[in-house]
Amino acid sequence: MIYKHPLLFKALCYVDGHWLHSDSGRSVAVNNPADGKLIGHVPMLDQPQITAAVDAAHRAFAGWREQSLEARATILRRWAALLLEHQEDLARILSQEQGKPLAESRGEIAYAASFIPWFAEEARRLYGQTIPSHIPGAHLGTIKEPVGVCALLTPWNFPSAMITRKAAAALAAGCTVVIKPAHETPFSALALAQLAEEAGFPAGVFNVVLGDPQMTMQTLVQDSRVRSVSFTGSTRVGKLVLQAAAHDVKKVALELGGNAPFIVCADADLELAVKVAVQAKFQTSGQDCCAANRIMVERSIYPAFLQRFAAAVRDLRVGPALVGEQEQRVDIGPLMHQAAFDVTAARVADALQLGARRLVGGEAHALGGLFYQPTVLADVTPEMRIYRDENFAPIAGIMPFDTLEQAIEMANDTEYGLAAYICSNRLDLIYPLIRRLDHAMIAVNGVKFTGHPIPFGGMKASGLGREGGTEGFEAFVETKYFCLHHQGQF
Image (tube, rainbow, N blue to C red; front, side):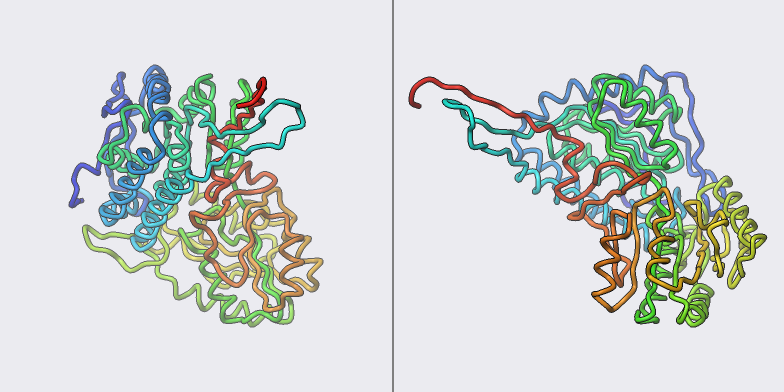
C-alpha cells in the first residue's frame, strides 16, 4: 500500500517519545480480514516495557498539567488538523486492518478528529464553584484537577475514533495517557501516535503499547500510578477491568456491549423506517455496539415492513474495501475474524431451528473467507440466540408486537442498556417510550445520534460513565473542595 505520508504506517510501539521493538523480539501478525493477507507485524511488548510506559506518563504528568490550557489546546488543535490533512491515508490504513468500506473509514477519521478541538475548547469550562459559606469566617469552593495517568483500552471496530474520544478529554484536562489498542487493529493507533508526535506532545504525554492482552490490561490497571481507566469492549472483559481497578479504587469508565431494540410504530413513515433500520443494523457491517439487533414492528404494518426491508437488504453490496489500490463501492465488509464468523453462523442456525423465517441471506457469502451474507430473519422469538446475544454481524432479527406495553417489555428484556431506536410520528407515543426504555441513548426517526457534544454511554451491563460532551471529562478529573478560614478583613 502506497501512502502520501509513509511515516504513518508504523510497526513499532510508542513510549516516552521513542519508537520501540519488543525486548524479547515477540511480535504478532496483523492480517487484512477481507483477504487474509499479511499487512505487517507489530511488537508485543514485555511487562517491564508496559510498566516503562506508565513510568513515562507519570514523569510527564507534572509538566503537562502545569502547561497553560491554551498551550495544551494549541497542540490538540494541531493534532486534529493533522488527522484531517491525512484523512485519506488514515482511512486506508483503517480499512486494511478493520475491513470496513473506505467511505465508512473516511467518516470515522472525520468523526475521530471532531472530538479533539471539542475537548480542547470545552476544557475552558472545567469550572469550579464558589460555595456560599455556612462556616463563619471561611471561604468555600471547588476546583477541577486532572487525575493523573490514564489507561485507555480501545476496541477494533472503531480503532481511531475510540482513541480520540477518550484521549482528547484526558489530554485537554491535563492528564497523560497510555493507550492499549486492540491487537487486530494496531496500525490506526500507531498512526495517531505519529501525528501526535508531529503535533508536539511532549515525551511521555501520549504513549501507545501492545502486548499480551491480559498481561497488558492487568499491568496497566493494577499499577497504582494509573488513576483512571477507560475501556471500550465486551461486557465480559469490562467486568474484569472493573474488578482489577477496584484493587486501589481507580476512576473507571466502561463502554460495553449492546442489544439495541428498534421499535416501529404503526403510524411511522414506512419508507423512512426501513431506510433508518437498514442503516442502524448494517453500519460497520453490523459490528457496532449501537447496531439495531432486535427490530420490533407493530403487527398491522409487519408484512409491509418485512417486504420492503428484505428488498433493501438484498441491494446491499458486499466486498472488500480495496482491491489493490482501487476503492470498491461496497456497503458490507468482512467480519473481523474467524471466531466472529463462526458464532454468526451458529446464531443463524439456532434461529432457523427454532422457527425463524429466512427472508434474505443466512449463509456464508460467495466471496468466501470472512464474508457473510447480509441476513434478514423474521418471526424471531426470545428463545433464540439472535434475540438474546449481542450480534456483531450483518444479521437482522425482526419480530411483531401488538401493544406498546409489549414492545417496551421486549425492548427492556436484555441485560444491556446502550442504544435504542424509535420510529413514530406521534409525540404522545414517542416521549413516553423515551422515558420507559431502559437504554441510555434513544434515536427517534433517524440513525445518526453520536458525536462530540453528546454524552455517549450505557446503562445496566452496557457500562459506567459517559464519553463525549461535558460529561466526557468526568473520568479524567477530580473535584477538589477547599475551606479557607481567615482572620479579619482581606
